[in-house]
Image 1 (cartoon, one colour):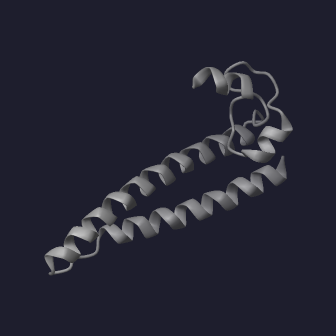
Image 2 (image 1 turned 135 degrees about the vertical axis):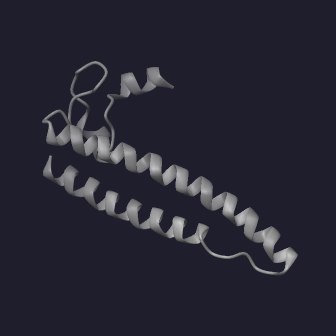
Image 3 (image 1 turned 30 degrees about the vertical axis):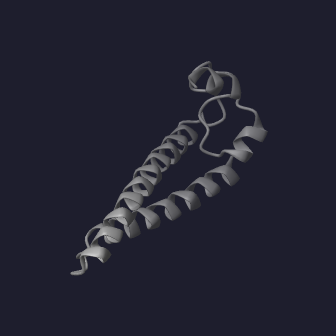
Length: 105
């Protein structure tokens, strides 16, 4: 479990760095050239989407870390069954077994 925790903590640090960079990008001034402004606005939309995705992933990582701290990290939060170790290896922030994850789709 400690390897998974270390992986999640490293991922958490990476996501926090990315979020900081995305938010720094949002605070910069637009170029004076109208064509450049148009491109910058398009880029801003992409950065906004990346920010949202990184934040959602960070929430998943925090949830998984909290479950590990509570001693529930390897149990499905929906059905209570063990989450396959291969799933946790591939997706360390998983909180659902594969069957329950499929049901949520």
